Image (tube, rainbow, N blue to C red; front, side, top):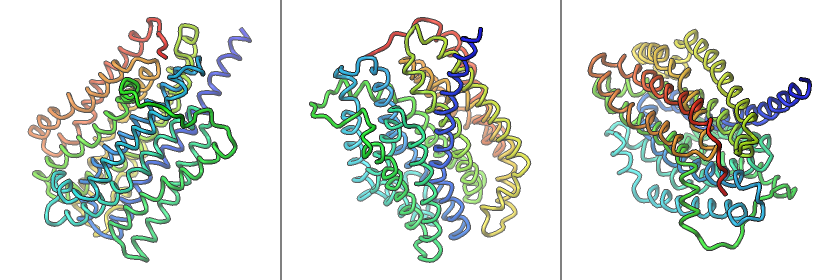
Length: 446
């Protein structure tokens, strides 16, 4: 009995070590955009805030690609760790790095030559297109930094240094907040300044993580390889649920922006911008839990590790539900002050729309956490198909028709209800896959 208790305590200690580091790091990482929201709202105005919300899908796509490559490559690296001399284990990092470089070239080209066209496609009008194109241009030009940072964060964490990964994210985010203030207020750079501050943060994060290499603690290296499309596809497939998670956020924002523009104009979009960016921070908590459990579950992805997997799954779900409860109570109690903090012009309509929307919209936290954790858990067990189903259901298949139907029936209230309703339905599938789909023996892929 004592041995069993000690074993369980050891599992919980490992869970706490990885998850706490990643939750703190992801909260800091999400402050990239939240800091922009606050300083843009207070320092520039509602049109700039609306423009920022219109540009979020571009950020979601770029960040999603980075997470897909980083999470997929790191997952394959951990899953193949039982055979450290295998070609799969030795070349996982290099294949992921080459993929990130190719994607960065595409994003940089788009930022240099297509920023206005992208802004117009995302819904910018004559009041917002100048702000939006400035932000997107700089964001995409610096895409190599964002993608490189995502890659290193995932591999350093899976290489046994979750606290260093956390430190990189937190210190980079703090630097972003300071630079936001300097560029927007004293230097008066407006949206270009906000984007430049955001693009500087990953540089600082990567400098912090370079300690892992300076001290020669890294077990992954750049190796001479011939790019294998099969290996590249394997990395993308393992990480695709992370891409879908980010991409779905962007698609939801695009759809919601167009629907809200028809219902409440730019004021409604600005109000949704407040909700969407607060959601980035709150969702990052669940993403931190999901990324924290990934290396633990992947290292025990065989029949002998079943007990560890079950314990990690239990701790992750309980933690998610407790944090959801705390977050929702806080949002409900302080919705008006939160809305007013982002309302430079003291527009009562903006405060009313945003504060009322928060109490409905953030019911989704109770279900979204379960869905995000389920997707990551299944991917870590080398079951990417089930993870993909969850991601696609919540990101595309259900939420888009639900938004159109509910908005036509209930107007703006229907928009706020769309995400809670969708996440609740997907949560049923998540529990089904977690507690039935994982009972069969997990075959480790190398």
